[in-house]
Picture 1 (cartoon, one colour):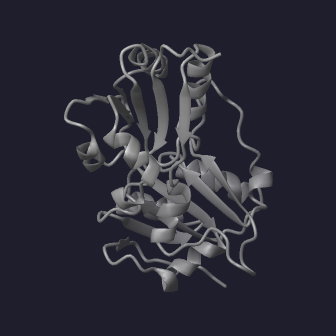
Picture 2 (cartoon, helix red, strand yellow):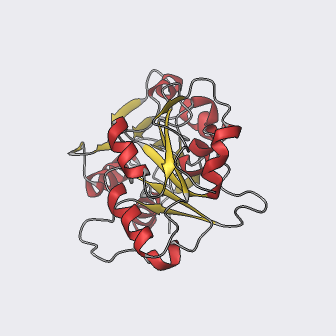
Length: 263
């Protein structure tokens, strides 16, 4: 049961990067917030929408550096709910797509804190759309799955690569570091090495970069191009549509696109 004496925590998705892709409701909450806890991939220009009196707290997790642990973030949200009427937990993309929003919701609900979830535009779809890749396309892809490129600490089990290899479109988030392993597992599971594949870095932003190739070559091309996180990876026939559907004028192409893909 929620406690009426506590403020409300809003788990808000900030979208994939372009501030124009933030939802209307999320923006309204930013403008009315007493405190905002924001992640590393949130576009910082969104914080300019906050009231001058709002407390801004960086809780972003970056490779090799965590400002706060997840447990500490949970406790901080709980504490702020005692002193603030509106606490915004601002997360990149969507709070429930590998954003630990479910963990925070469960903790706050268990401790009586009123919570609202404001979904955001996930980079799993938006970054690819900005690269000219629809995750589904009639006659090419009738299904897709989104997976994380690395498992939670202490989780040793591998994904079901045999099942994933059968899907029309596979989208990988947080997968740059483990891309050689991911592609090797899909190849071992029987996925055609000539399957088009593509990686998008900083999707929806003016810095957007793309590396394209095949399942067999993408890991090498990403390494050669020096493409680093954050990036979204897509594997499937729809990836090749980027060659003709690419529309984002700021996008930079790295590598040799789909020259090595055999049809």
